[in-house]
Amino acid sequence: MRIRIVDAFTDRPFTGNPAGVLLLGPGGFPDDSRLQQVAAELNLSETAFAHPLPPGGDADWALRWFTPVTEVDMCGHATLATAHVLHTTAAASGTVRFAARCGVLTSTAHPDGSIALDFPTAPLTPEAPAEGLAAALGAEPVSVHDTGPHIGDLLVELGDEATVRGLAPDFAALTAHSRRGVIATAAAAAPDCGYDFVSRGFFPAVGIDEDPVTGSAHTALAPFWSARLGRDELTGLQASARSGLVRTSLRGARTLLTGRAVTVLDGELLVTL
Image (cartoon, rainbow, N blue to C red):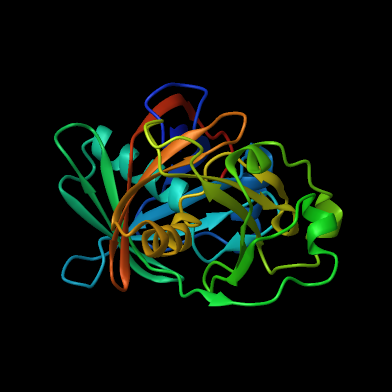
């Protein structure tokens, strides 16, 4: 069975967010425990498993995502990586529909090599900062929003870009503040820097202290910053050590996440699933 590692939301190897991708044959997924073992072995923020579905249904492929320690409801970068593998191997073309735990997601490949993902927009609910959040994160929040059931993060607005870049959180303490993780964000420091806002994503509760580029988080970042900046088309920079750009387009209940990907490893899994 072929197993690939794809760097997502980048066009250069060893940047963006790496995801494992395994395309399975028709007939369903192996046992959850086996999928979890493979994800733990790869030890990437997410590994995606997909298998083709019979024609004529609502989706073309079934898709699941696992961190090294658990399955997640939604993952943007591993979906982008999966779509990239499908298109670069000619297993699919044009628009691909994925059946996932969070509903049907679609990916559309463009002639320039970019891929647009159609995801549900996260509902944002403002809330007061919980006691201990500022200490755990290492900065005082300007505002805090819950991002709804599929993402399960706290979106935390900070004072400026430099504060976001300089964060050194207490990861153990952060696990008490959300189901999945904490997204820290601020407006871009300069209007002509090539992006509109910055973010960093911390997910110690699911085994990832810091995620390099979190596509799903941008379904919350898009409505948050579109409301403040007055534009539906934005670009976000996730300012991790690897870094990556996500173009967002707010379409009401749906958000388009557009980026590129590059395959950096293509090998063979020598065990039976």
